Length: 85
Image 1 (cartoon, one colour):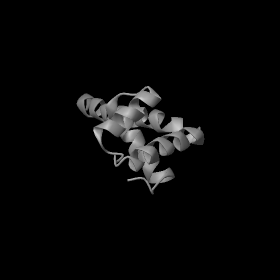
Image 2 (cartoon, one colour):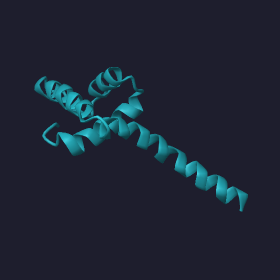
Image 3 (cartoon, rainbow, N blue to C red):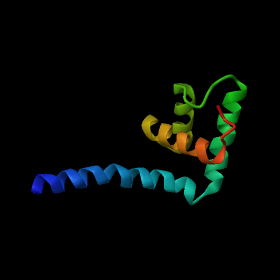
Image 4 (tube, one colour):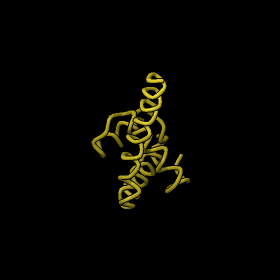
């Protein structure tokens, strides 16, 4: 029983952390706009949003680690700038 509760709590922690990460865009659409603009600029140079170079640029811009930047970039592209490659 206790093991099941621990596993349940362990599975909830990443979702809560992810929610806080995405809240920065949900609460401030200008952040999404800035990320889209940066990704469009990279696209113009032939760099897609999923490359390490793009992810690292967004990470530096937003003060994130690469994993969080990749999650945030995927979310932003999907909802705010589907024209970005």
